[in-house]
Length: 89
Image 1 (cartoon, rainbow, N blue to C red):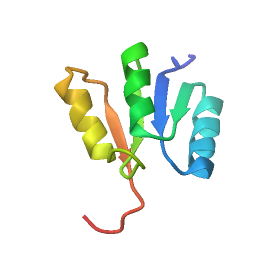
Image 2 (tube, one colour):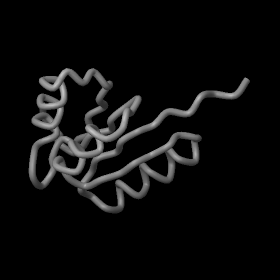
Image 3 (cartoon, rainbow, N blue to C red):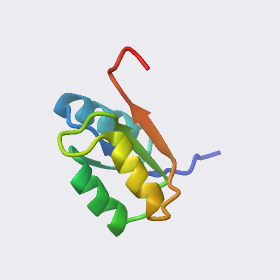
């Protein structure tokens, strides 16, 4: 049985990690769009529907948490998976 592919938005300001995530998730059959800042993430989220946002906690313009807050306040309920390199809560 073939799995359905999802449209994913991947947001990370580390170019190597963004490339890695895009390649791996694309090779798993998902349709990936990537960007490296919160402003572009907002733009993509207004233009397209995604099934999942993979969101870096630390971005150059907005924190990932702020992106998620703004997303929710706009009524968007797309699931968000937060990534962080932080080693504490």
